[in-house]
Image (tube, rainbow, N blue to C red):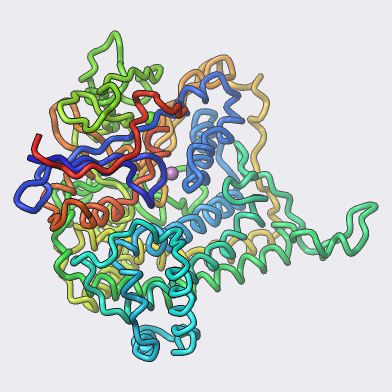
Length: 592
Ligand code: NI
Ligand code: CA
């Protein structure tokens, strides 16, 4: 079968190469390869456990909040620390904000252009677009004047010949089948989403000092000072005008009011722009319901603690679903997770490479590049082909991400999630089987964004009410002194990034991190084959995907983007010419 190579896959986080064998106009087999080794787990070794999150956060510019929190929680787990209520709520608000922003950005900036033809939008009628938009929601910008201005802006951009983010698209591909008015509508919101997400991330700058990579996480809670019950006062020697220019103190009337306003704006954007657009797109591509389905096993660690114990209840529950059977949710425990490096550029020497090893028992991450030597045109025939390890749960392959979380919540009897899924399905005229593929992943993000934008408001109310009772505690620092720590300890955290389950496993010895293992969401989804030769989740999802024009494999991008890989997180030093870093190219397969 001719091999198609797409490297790098763009509009994702990190460096991912996809190879696909094409037969009879469809993907017959697929290989997912993480092409960059970063060694984050090695960088964390020897560090003060209280500093670990600052390093872990740099795994990614998209998922930084997630890894910071995962690291802090794993250290708290090792040292038996329970964080105060205010800290739990602040963490939920920071992470929930990340989810809502991430899902919107994923829809518009990372995946819409797989479905929306920018060039076709140039031919759209602004009046028809306005009529369509008004039929979908009450968003106040939906006038024909507005859509004409957007169309003119796009035309100027295209006529200038400097296409920027729209260069190299597969415009005019026969798989683009939206009416031009919907193309223009979603492109208008593509541009609006860029502005909106920048404003919304001010929640992170208020609560965390900066975005990306908020700086107020702390082992034991949050490094924020409540300034409750009084106006923002000048500090000594500060001119009143300087006070005006200062950002509001995070935990003050002004800071929390700003956050409330940003959440209210996000709720309007999600309900009046993102969800209607995602629904219209899904409804317009019914033939895609059964494409990209994959293995059908779904894993969620769960996220957003709703009380002040360390375990459940969680807003998004923990569990797994096997073989698309939504009648049963199996329990999930960290002990079920193990990884193999049988087809990865690592060794477990002296143990067997084919062994499934639990993260706490892996010892060091031992990189050993064993792929083809450059110039590399294809990984065909390479036994080892990725910097990603292959995680398995009780030796089962699992898909993680918004779809997994929504299905686990649905099957766990989470009424609000189930109602939103059923309502969306009924409106779109799609059955449950449509949930399991490419469209289901798009729908799951829209459902989850709605659930979270509502809950963000609730967490903020709870935080304000709790501060008003006089409980100003933001951190438990009674375990801050390393002299009081046990000589050896181990900790784990199981949480969720927007793109799926994230686990951090660590050991502390002599008051430093002696081992650190991260099993990221995209390691699950982008996994290479395991010791038994079984494909990873994305590889499996690609099999059967139609490819009408191998020179322009738009359909492959649809499936890959629906999984939203972040290979930066999944692989966790790039040297040009390093054999592990394969040159950027697209090869369309001819016969071998
Ligand atoms: Ni990431
Ligand atoms: Ca890892």
